[in-house]
Length: 163
Image (cartoon, rainbow, N blue to C red; front, side):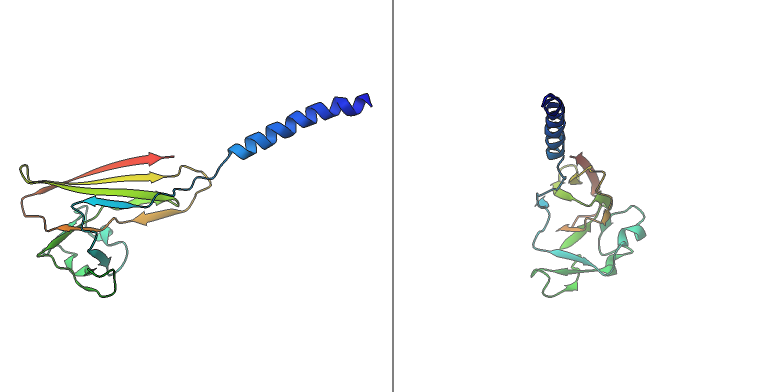
């Protein structure tokens, strides 16, 4: 009878520790939806004609009517039901390509500083740092904003939060 009691206590302790440690390990999943704010025109959807257009942009991620890639975009103002050539007299396209993990959310915000002639495109990306999340996604972050006048500079602020 004593031998059973002697093995029962350590077995019980190991079992409790195993269950406690296993239950604390949780999968990382970002439940927040991506949000666009500021001068971003959420009513104007940007449709590139193919993927990886930013690779052709040589680091100039501002698309206007004179851009080399200007003819590679369509737009929609009715949720994607119909597409038309992008209207560069009313809007500009901003982009910022990045590689993110398999679970992420984006907060994108654009502000115009007309006094200093600066447009700031801020992206906050929240993503998992879970080593089990091995899939990566290439996101080009195309957005429509009111037409950016010539002479304005564009500043990009990128903040990465890993949870």
